[in-house]
Amino acid sequence: MNDVLKRIGEIGIVPVIKLDGADKAVPLGRALAAGGIAAAEVTFRTKAAPDAIRSLAEELPELLVGAGTVTSVAMAEAALKAGARFIVSPGWDDAVVDFCLERGMPVLPGVSSPDGVMKGISKGLEVLKFFPAEASGGIPMLDALAGPFAGVRFVPTGGIDASNIGPYARKASVLAVGGSWMVKAELVEAGDWDGIERLAREAVFALHGFELAHIGLNEPDAQAAARDAAALASLFGFSAKEGASSIFAADIEILKSPYLGEKGHIAIRCNDVERAIARFRGMGIGIEGGTEKSDKGRLKTVYLGRQIGGFAFHLIRA
Image (tube, rainbow, N blue to C red; front, side, top):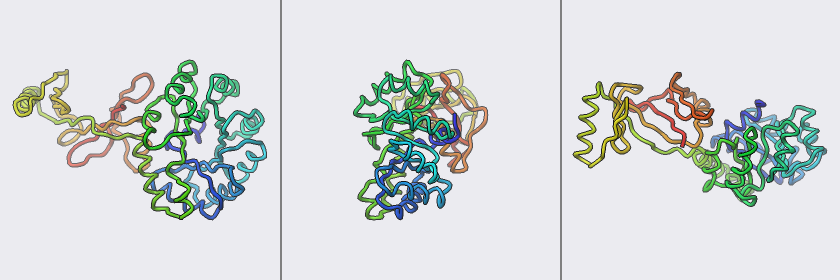
């Protein structure tokens, strides 16, 4: 996959931005990046788009900047000259797609039907925009498209916000999600960059869907683990479920021999393990090599290379 598209997948959210003036582009980009979203799709809905893209590309090179609502070759050419790294269209246009492909520019044309997906495949595209996502049937339609076109991934956009991003983010067919809820027009107009940073951070956590899955306690041997399980049953009525290497009592896992973590581990459920790993690597936190477990080509579990309070952290895909 193209490096730009790979990076979009790691970020996981593409803010869709409409700017009436290029002067607000850089502070807006800084607010998004501070909130954990290092990407922006500046739409060609206003004349300010090329200058806004140019400002972001020149002053915030760490931000992945693309152009959206590109409906003509002239727009695509202007976006390319301004420094856009990718092009997004609301629908299919052969001329726009061909222009981008001839120049090695990643392009995400909007599709909402099998015909559109097949056009993308015929052009060798691996990623397409699913638009308008909610109005086109949402998750059920996305699943229907993903079924016969397993090699294609989508960027659903339209009608998605913090309240419904999770189900999309969990799908293997979804590379990233597009939306504008974290760049509300009134906040941009008021220059409320703190408000946009806050919404961006909330969007990131909604994307990942982090939540406690279980707590693991290290014990030296099976006898000690059985003793702990019996104590939990006596105190709280938690029934024990014994496995080969541990005993579960409700959401407490008691290991029959010590594993990672001085005291044990805390398992955190998330929507996509690969995407979560990319986020933590950006924060300087790696993974414990050799702890990766996959299912159908996707990471299912992995341990992070970080402990807190003597506990290791274990990511589990929801």
